[in-house]
Image (cartoon, rainbow, N blue to C red; front, side):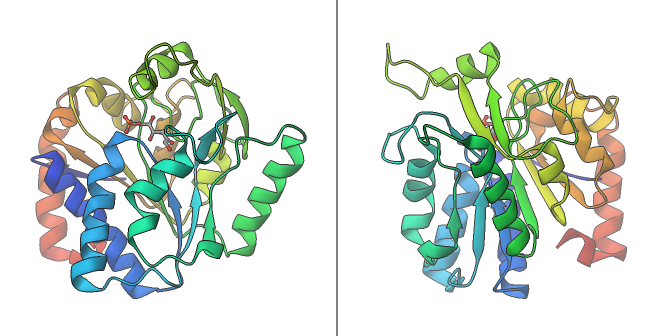
Length: 264
Ligand code: F6R
């Protein structure tokens, strides 16, 4: 696991976008796994800038989003469909046929739908680079504490902590979705490379648990310790509770000197 410490949210966002941009340039037909959430906003802003100013080309890229609230139509202001359109897809040259976001509005057979979502990922050749945020309770996607490390795309009941954290995005008095469709931990761990972004002091505790704590389904992000190519890009505030902070700094310095490709 590589831990990249960045002095600010802006630098974290630039670094994440730089890694995505290099991945897309190296393989224009790459398959990306995408996350939503406030942490990812700066990265998407920077990717849009790179598209506009540096002609970063997304026309052959395929994307799969991690999750969507159950019951929210695509046009709902808080749906992840809307988030992705507003912050990324509407501003770059993605082929709409290559965009995949779970549908939260199917009334009926989610088991079959989720199976087909997994099949579509497989048919696209698997996810080359998966972007993740992290919830305060350590979730990735909407894999809440106690989610199985073998889990696949499915419906998940959200914890009250997650509902509270996300309430601020909804209108006052509006009912919050209590469930979501989410890729599973097993699905996420199959990505070839994983990039987790975390910002702010509110995430410091859970970031430390995910990186330095025991591997446990109580902090589902800790599963990334099992992944051969997972990178955490975190700012100073989110890194506050890491015991090995100085070691990560030395790793960054020496890796940049001796194996610069590992950082790119
Ligand atoms: C969103 C997702 C979630 C968020 C996490 C952090 O697609 O999968 O796991 O990444 O809840 O959200 P923010 O960045 O808003 O703190």
